[in-house]
Image (cartoon, rainbow, N blue to C red):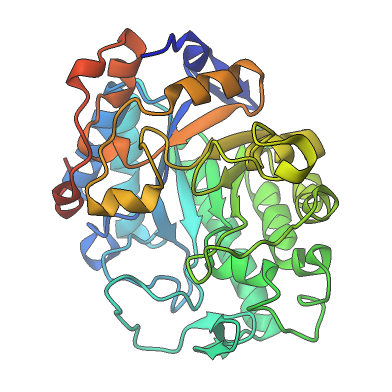
Length: 370
């Protein structure tokens, strides 16, 4: 195992201070009956805090809209009882010395793994699941305004409950990302347009509303991706100039941290410009906007994160590449996903160099909260 001291430097932004650079990535678990998290969920997150994770990002938790989730076990982040459940979660994490933010979400027209269908029609920019694939209905401007307000209320609730920051899910082909993507946004109004800058208006309005709803020092992260679950090869920005057009208005609106999701963190975003060892997505986002960035993508897995579902082990594979990129200050934080599902102590084991006792990821762990 390489020396990993670089991963264990403190980090501060706004009111958030964390002891190391390792983030628990948001991972949907669907263990929230009736949308309510309980003692098992609180204990799950508490174990990761006790295991040394610097910052925990919750699984996606949805806003107050009729069809904001695409699986029945996804938790709500609205309503008295669900919010009481999240209060217990953050208290448990703080009790273990951890820091945490909820990931606030709307799934749009994306289909869940189980194929579950909500009782009312799903909503999206243009009633599309993917290019040329209809699903649900296009959102009216009133629905858009109500959705923006629902995101802001959820963020305000996160601050009120005692969370340390909040993240908006704007990636992977869900609602906010569906507005970014020309394949799912064919709107003729001000929320559409030929350019990525125009199609970013919806996200920018959400960011502005969230920042107005929370205190000035309360950090706001936005998760973004080029790829979509509907199309792994999709790219919103083929050049650095287009990436700047996409991301800079969002940072200007108030995003403090860009959480840049790619399938393999070690792959360069624009190899034609800076080569095979060039900056990854988070590196380019930081260079172009000056915002703090989180990188993520198959950390601790020897290959693509999708292989984890077929039994890919969570090991220290790739840590040498991660350390090298952190040492050159390419990005600020690194998010770890599958490796933490089976082993809540993964971070501490990496810190002390205990590679022999790292547990491998097991697909069976997806069926329970280990």
